[in-house]
Image 1 (cartoon, rainbow, N blue to C red):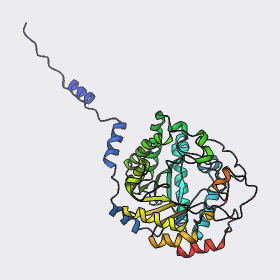
Image 2: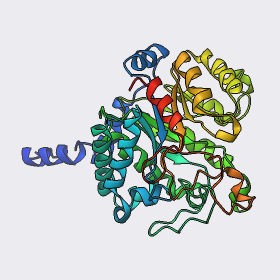
Image 3: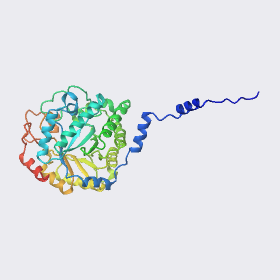
Image 4: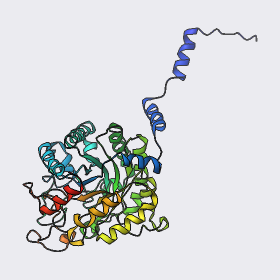
Length: 385
Protein backbone atom coordinates (compact mmCIF):
# COMPACT_ATOMS: atom_id res chain seq x y z
CA UNK A 1 0.00 0.00 0.00
CA UNK A 2 1.34 3.34 -0.94
CA UNK A 3 2.10 5.60 2.06
CA UNK A 4 0.42 8.94 2.25
CA UNK A 5 2.33 11.91 3.62
CA UNK A 6 0.27 13.98 6.01
CA UNK A 7 0.80 17.69 6.10
CA UNK A 8 0.75 18.95 9.70
CA UNK A 9 -0.61 22.49 10.02
CA UNK A 10 1.88 25.08 11.28
CA UNK A 11 -0.43 25.97 14.19
CA UNK A 12 -0.24 22.39 15.49
CA UNK A 13 3.55 22.43 15.28
CA UNK A 14 3.66 25.61 17.32
CA UNK A 15 1.37 24.09 19.96
CA UNK A 16 3.55 20.96 20.10
CA UNK A 17 6.68 23.07 20.56
CA UNK A 18 5.14 25.13 23.35
CA UNK A 19 3.90 22.06 25.21
CA UNK A 20 7.17 20.18 25.05
CA UNK A 21 9.60 23.06 25.32
CA UNK A 22 7.84 25.06 28.02
CA UNK A 23 9.93 27.08 30.45
CA UNK A 24 11.00 25.45 33.70
CA UNK A 25 8.59 25.57 36.59
CA UNK A 26 8.84 28.30 39.18
CA UNK A 27 10.43 25.84 41.59
CA UNK A 28 13.01 24.74 38.98
CA UNK A 29 13.82 28.36 38.16
CA UNK A 30 14.25 29.13 41.83
CA UNK A 31 16.53 26.13 42.32
CA UNK A 32 18.58 27.10 39.27
CA UNK A 33 18.87 30.66 40.53
CA UNK A 34 20.00 29.44 43.94
CA UNK A 35 22.54 27.10 42.35
CA UNK A 36 24.02 30.00 40.41
CA UNK A 37 23.87 32.39 43.35
CA UNK A 38 25.29 30.06 46.01
CA UNK A 39 28.65 31.33 47.12
CA UNK A 40 31.71 29.52 48.38
CA UNK A 41 33.09 29.66 51.90
CA UNK A 42 34.98 32.92 52.19
CA UNK A 43 38.73 32.76 51.81
CA UNK A 44 40.74 33.83 54.82
CA UNK A 45 41.74 36.94 52.90
CA UNK A 46 38.12 37.90 52.21
CA UNK A 47 37.14 37.24 55.82
CA UNK A 48 39.97 39.38 57.13
CA UNK A 49 39.20 42.17 54.69
CA UNK A 50 35.60 42.15 55.93
CA UNK A 51 36.81 42.28 59.53
CA UNK A 52 39.10 45.20 58.86
CA UNK A 53 36.03 47.22 57.90
CA UNK A 54 34.45 46.65 61.33
CA UNK A 55 35.12 48.60 64.49
CA UNK A 56 36.22 46.45 67.42
CA UNK A 57 33.01 44.56 68.11
CA UNK A 58 31.67 44.56 71.67
CA UNK A 59 28.14 43.54 72.60
CA UNK A 60 25.95 41.13 74.49
CA UNK A 61 23.70 38.17 73.83
CA UNK A 62 20.47 40.12 73.79
CA UNK A 63 16.91 39.29 74.71
CA UNK A 64 14.56 41.92 76.16
CA UNK A 65 14.05 41.61 79.91
CA UNK A 66 10.33 40.87 79.53
CA UNK A 67 10.89 37.77 77.34
CA UNK A 68 11.64 34.36 78.83
CA UNK A 69 12.81 32.92 75.52
CA UNK A 70 13.09 33.45 71.77
CA UNK A 71 9.39 32.79 71.18
CA UNK A 72 8.27 35.41 73.66
CA UNK A 73 10.67 37.86 72.05
CA UNK A 74 9.52 37.24 68.47
CA UNK A 75 5.87 36.19 68.51
CA UNK A 76 3.45 38.87 67.36
CA UNK A 77 1.53 39.14 70.62
CA UNK A 78 4.64 39.69 72.75
CA UNK A 79 7.03 41.47 70.35
CA UNK A 80 7.79 44.62 72.37
CA UNK A 81 9.56 47.30 70.35
CA UNK A 82 9.54 49.81 73.21
CA UNK A 83 11.46 47.52 75.57
CA UNK A 84 13.81 46.42 72.82
CA UNK A 85 14.66 50.02 71.94
CA UNK A 86 15.08 51.10 75.55
CA UNK A 87 17.43 48.27 76.42
CA UNK A 88 19.48 48.43 73.23
CA UNK A 89 19.83 52.11 74.06
CA UNK A 90 21.41 51.16 77.38
CA UNK A 91 23.82 48.87 75.51
CA UNK A 92 24.74 51.65 73.09
CA UNK A 93 25.28 54.09 75.95
CA UNK A 94 28.25 52.02 77.20
CA UNK A 95 29.81 51.66 73.74
CA UNK A 96 28.30 48.38 72.57
CA UNK A 97 28.01 48.21 68.80
CA UNK A 98 26.71 44.68 68.22
CA UNK A 99 24.42 42.07 69.77
CA UNK A 100 23.92 38.35 69.34
CA UNK A 101 20.22 37.62 68.92
CA UNK A 102 18.44 34.28 68.67
CA UNK A 103 15.71 33.65 66.12
CA UNK A 104 13.41 30.58 66.13
CA UNK A 105 11.94 28.34 63.45
CA UNK A 106 8.37 28.30 64.85
CA UNK A 107 7.44 31.96 64.23
CA UNK A 108 8.58 31.50 60.62
CA UNK A 109 6.41 28.40 60.32
CA UNK A 110 3.39 30.26 61.73
CA UNK A 111 3.62 33.31 59.45
CA UNK A 112 6.85 33.81 57.55
CA UNK A 113 5.98 37.23 56.12
CA UNK A 114 5.00 38.63 59.51
CA UNK A 115 8.13 37.20 61.13
CA UNK A 116 10.35 38.75 58.46
CA UNK A 117 8.61 42.08 59.07
CA UNK A 118 9.33 41.84 62.80
CA UNK A 119 12.98 41.05 62.11
CA UNK A 120 13.10 44.09 59.83
CA UNK A 121 11.57 46.22 62.60
CA UNK A 122 14.14 44.91 65.07
CA UNK A 123 16.96 45.71 62.65
CA UNK A 124 15.67 49.26 62.24
CA UNK A 125 15.63 49.72 66.03
CA UNK A 126 19.13 48.30 66.38
CA UNK A 127 20.38 50.46 63.52
CA UNK A 128 19.08 53.60 65.24
CA UNK A 129 21.32 52.65 68.17
CA UNK A 130 24.23 51.84 65.79
CA UNK A 131 24.14 48.17 66.79
CA UNK A 132 24.69 45.47 64.13
CA UNK A 133 23.34 42.11 65.30
CA UNK A 134 24.64 38.61 64.74
CA UNK A 135 21.49 36.50 64.19
CA UNK A 136 21.31 32.87 65.38
CA UNK A 137 19.15 30.29 63.57
CA UNK A 138 19.28 27.11 65.66
CA UNK A 139 20.08 26.28 69.30
CA UNK A 140 20.58 22.96 71.12
CA UNK A 141 20.32 24.39 74.66
CA UNK A 142 17.64 24.03 77.32
CA UNK A 143 14.03 22.92 76.76
CA UNK A 144 13.75 20.48 73.81
CA UNK A 145 9.97 20.89 73.52
CA UNK A 146 9.21 24.44 72.28
CA UNK A 147 5.56 25.30 71.88
CA UNK A 148 4.16 28.39 70.13
CA UNK A 149 1.74 30.65 71.95
CA UNK A 150 1.81 32.01 75.45
CA UNK A 151 5.01 31.03 77.24
CA UNK A 152 5.24 29.82 80.83
CA UNK A 153 6.31 31.99 83.71
CA UNK A 154 9.87 31.63 85.05
CA UNK A 155 10.64 29.13 87.78
CA UNK A 156 11.76 31.23 90.76
CA UNK A 157 15.53 31.70 91.01
CA UNK A 158 16.34 29.30 88.11
CA UNK A 159 18.74 30.21 85.30
CA UNK A 160 17.06 30.19 81.85
CA UNK A 161 14.08 28.21 83.12
CA UNK A 162 12.06 28.83 79.97
CA UNK A 163 14.60 29.00 77.13
CA UNK A 164 13.77 26.63 74.27
CA UNK A 165 15.67 24.75 71.60
CA UNK A 166 15.31 25.27 67.86
CA UNK A 167 14.47 22.95 66.29
CA UNK A 168 12.80 21.03 69.11
CA UNK A 169 13.37 17.32 69.63
CA UNK A 170 10.25 16.31 67.71
CA UNK A 171 11.34 18.23 64.62
CA UNK A 172 14.97 17.18 65.00
CA UNK A 173 14.15 13.47 64.77
CA UNK A 174 11.48 13.87 62.08
CA UNK A 175 13.08 14.21 58.65
CA UNK A 176 9.71 15.14 57.13
CA UNK A 177 10.10 18.50 58.91
CA UNK A 178 13.48 19.26 57.37
CA UNK A 179 11.98 20.98 54.30
CA UNK A 180 10.28 23.57 56.50
CA UNK A 181 13.57 24.15 58.35
CA UNK A 182 15.22 24.62 54.98
CA UNK A 183 12.57 27.16 54.00
CA UNK A 184 13.17 28.99 57.28
CA UNK A 185 16.94 29.34 56.85
CA UNK A 186 16.81 30.13 53.15
CA UNK A 187 13.85 32.46 53.53
CA UNK A 188 15.42 34.58 56.24
CA UNK A 189 18.89 34.76 54.69
CA UNK A 190 17.58 35.49 51.21
CA UNK A 191 15.35 38.29 52.52
CA UNK A 192 18.26 39.99 54.30
CA UNK A 193 21.20 38.76 52.20
CA UNK A 194 22.34 42.26 51.28
CA UNK A 195 21.22 44.06 54.43
CA UNK A 196 24.09 46.10 55.83
CA UNK A 197 22.34 46.30 59.20
CA UNK A 198 23.23 42.65 59.89
CA UNK A 199 26.70 41.70 61.09
CA UNK A 200 26.45 37.99 60.29
CA UNK A 201 24.65 34.67 60.67
CA UNK A 202 25.33 32.22 63.51
CA UNK A 203 24.03 28.93 62.12
CA UNK A 204 23.73 26.83 65.29
CA UNK A 205 24.42 27.58 68.94
CA UNK A 206 26.26 24.78 70.77
CA UNK A 207 24.92 22.05 68.45
CA UNK A 208 26.42 19.25 70.56
CA UNK A 209 25.02 20.46 73.91
CA UNK A 210 23.08 17.68 75.69
CA UNK A 211 21.54 20.19 78.19
CA UNK A 212 23.24 18.65 81.24
CA UNK A 213 21.09 18.20 84.36
CA UNK A 214 18.34 20.55 83.18
CA UNK A 215 16.67 18.40 80.50
CA UNK A 216 19.02 15.46 79.92
CA UNK A 217 16.44 12.96 81.18
CA UNK A 218 14.10 13.86 78.30
CA UNK A 219 16.66 14.65 75.59
CA UNK A 220 17.14 12.51 72.51
CA UNK A 221 19.74 9.94 73.63
CA UNK A 222 21.55 10.11 70.27
CA UNK A 223 20.93 13.80 69.67
CA UNK A 224 24.22 14.52 67.89
CA UNK A 225 23.42 11.84 65.28
CA UNK A 226 20.47 14.00 64.24
CA UNK A 227 22.25 17.33 64.65
CA UNK A 228 25.37 16.61 62.57
CA UNK A 229 23.73 16.15 59.14
CA UNK A 230 21.28 18.97 59.78
CA UNK A 231 24.13 21.30 60.81
CA UNK A 232 25.90 20.48 57.55
CA UNK A 233 22.73 21.17 55.59
CA UNK A 234 22.00 24.40 57.46
CA UNK A 235 25.35 25.84 56.33
CA UNK A 236 24.54 24.81 52.74
CA UNK A 237 21.05 26.34 52.96
CA UNK A 238 22.34 29.63 54.30
CA UNK A 239 25.15 29.84 51.78
CA UNK A 240 22.79 29.04 48.89
CA UNK A 241 21.06 32.40 49.49
CA UNK A 242 24.38 34.13 48.73
CA UNK A 243 24.59 36.28 51.87
CA UNK A 244 26.90 39.26 51.85
CA UNK A 245 27.43 38.66 55.58
CA UNK A 246 29.66 35.93 57.05
CA UNK A 247 28.46 32.59 58.43
CA UNK A 248 29.72 31.00 61.64
CA UNK A 249 28.98 28.48 64.40
CA UNK A 250 30.90 28.56 67.65
CA UNK A 251 32.87 25.73 69.26
CA UNK A 252 32.48 25.69 73.00
CA UNK A 253 33.98 22.62 74.72
CA UNK A 254 36.88 20.21 74.39
CA UNK A 255 40.41 20.49 73.05
CA UNK A 256 40.79 22.62 69.91
CA UNK A 257 44.60 22.67 69.94
CA UNK A 258 44.80 20.61 66.73
CA UNK A 259 42.27 19.98 63.99
CA UNK A 260 42.64 16.21 64.42
CA UNK A 261 41.40 16.53 68.01
CA UNK A 262 38.08 18.04 66.99
CA UNK A 263 34.81 16.11 67.05
CA UNK A 264 32.90 15.66 63.76
CA UNK A 265 30.51 18.46 64.73
CA UNK A 266 33.37 20.79 65.64
CA UNK A 267 35.06 20.09 62.31
CA UNK A 268 31.91 21.09 60.46
CA UNK A 269 31.62 24.24 62.57
CA UNK A 270 35.16 25.39 61.89
CA UNK A 271 35.51 24.17 58.30
CA UNK A 272 32.23 25.73 57.16
CA UNK A 273 32.55 29.06 58.98
CA UNK A 274 33.63 32.21 57.18
CA UNK A 275 34.70 33.67 60.52
CA UNK A 276 35.61 31.62 63.59
CA UNK A 277 33.52 31.86 66.75
CA UNK A 278 33.84 30.25 70.15
CA UNK A 279 32.60 30.36 73.74
CA UNK A 280 34.61 30.53 76.95
CA UNK A 281 33.43 30.87 80.54
CA UNK A 282 36.73 29.96 82.22
CA UNK A 283 39.45 32.18 83.64
CA UNK A 284 41.59 34.59 81.60
CA UNK A 285 44.49 32.15 81.16
CA UNK A 286 42.22 29.58 79.53
CA UNK A 287 40.59 32.28 77.43
CA UNK A 288 43.93 33.44 76.07
CA UNK A 289 45.07 29.87 75.44
CA UNK A 290 41.99 29.13 73.35
CA UNK A 291 42.47 32.29 71.33
CA UNK A 292 45.95 30.99 70.53
CA UNK A 293 44.55 27.62 69.44
CA UNK A 294 42.09 29.22 67.01
CA UNK A 295 44.49 31.79 65.53
CA UNK A 296 45.94 29.00 63.36
CA UNK A 297 42.92 29.38 61.06
CA UNK A 298 44.02 32.95 60.22
CA UNK A 299 40.45 34.21 60.30
CA UNK A 300 38.59 36.78 62.42
CA UNK A 301 37.76 35.50 65.90
CA UNK A 302 34.45 36.17 67.64
CA UNK A 303 33.90 35.12 71.25
CA UNK A 304 30.13 34.82 71.09
CA UNK A 305 29.65 33.84 74.74
CA UNK A 306 31.61 34.66 77.89
CA UNK A 307 31.25 36.40 81.28
CA UNK A 308 30.41 34.26 84.29
CA UNK A 309 31.69 36.28 87.21
CA UNK A 310 32.21 33.46 89.76
CA UNK A 311 34.28 31.54 87.20
CA UNK A 312 36.74 34.39 86.68
CA UNK A 313 35.22 35.14 83.27
CA UNK A 314 34.75 38.88 83.76
CA UNK A 315 34.88 42.08 81.76
CA UNK A 316 37.98 43.20 83.65
CA UNK A 317 39.82 39.95 82.93
CA UNK A 318 38.72 39.28 79.36
CA UNK A 319 38.19 42.56 77.50
CA UNK A 320 41.82 43.78 77.61
CA UNK A 321 43.00 40.40 76.26
CA UNK A 322 40.33 40.51 73.56
CA UNK A 323 41.15 44.03 72.48
CA UNK A 324 44.86 43.20 72.28
CA UNK A 325 44.05 40.25 70.00
CA UNK A 326 41.15 42.04 68.26
CA UNK A 327 38.66 39.36 69.23
CA UNK A 328 35.00 40.40 68.98
CA UNK A 329 33.21 39.96 72.32
CA UNK A 330 29.60 39.06 73.14
CA UNK A 331 28.92 38.53 76.84
CA UNK A 332 25.87 36.60 77.98
CA UNK A 333 23.08 38.81 79.27
CA UNK A 334 22.29 42.50 79.19
CA UNK A 335 19.34 43.30 81.49
CA UNK A 336 18.17 41.24 84.46
CA UNK A 337 14.79 39.84 83.47
CA UNK A 338 12.68 36.77 82.86
CA UNK A 339 15.63 34.64 81.77
CA UNK A 340 17.01 35.05 85.33
CA UNK A 341 20.60 34.55 84.23
CA UNK A 342 21.95 36.44 87.22
CA UNK A 343 21.56 33.00 88.80
CA UNK A 344 24.21 30.40 87.98
CA UNK A 345 23.78 27.23 85.92
CA UNK A 346 23.76 25.23 89.16
CA UNK A 347 20.39 26.75 90.08
CA UNK A 348 18.92 23.72 88.26
CA UNK A 349 20.28 21.46 91.01
CA UNK A 350 20.84 23.88 93.90
CA UNK A 351 18.04 25.78 95.64
CA UNK A 352 18.35 29.57 95.60
CA UNK A 353 15.93 31.65 97.65
CA UNK A 354 17.21 35.15 96.93
CA UNK A 355 19.33 37.13 94.50
CA UNK A 356 22.93 35.88 94.58
CA UNK A 357 25.46 38.25 96.04
CA UNK A 358 27.53 37.90 92.89
CA UNK A 359 25.51 37.88 89.70
CA UNK A 360 26.40 35.15 87.22
CA UNK A 361 25.49 37.07 84.03
CA UNK A 362 23.81 40.39 83.08
CA UNK A 363 24.95 44.01 83.25
CA UNK A 364 21.93 46.20 84.06
CA UNK A 365 19.13 46.07 86.58
CA UNK A 366 15.57 46.40 85.30
CA UNK A 367 15.61 50.18 85.83
CA UNK A 368 18.75 50.60 83.71
CA UNK A 369 21.22 51.13 86.55
CA UNK A 370 24.41 49.08 86.25
CA UNK A 371 24.85 46.09 88.55
CA UNK A 372 28.50 47.12 88.89
CA UNK A 373 29.23 50.66 87.65
CA UNK A 374 32.94 49.95 87.34
CA UNK A 375 32.12 47.32 84.70
CA UNK A 376 30.11 49.63 82.50
CA UNK A 377 32.79 52.31 82.89
CA UNK A 378 35.44 49.80 81.72
CA UNK A 379 33.38 48.66 78.72
CA UNK A 380 32.79 52.28 77.76
CA UNK A 381 36.46 53.12 78.06
CA UNK A 382 37.73 50.13 76.07
CA UNK A 383 35.04 50.50 73.40
CA UNK A 384 36.12 54.11 72.97
CA UNK A 385 32.68 55.54 73.70
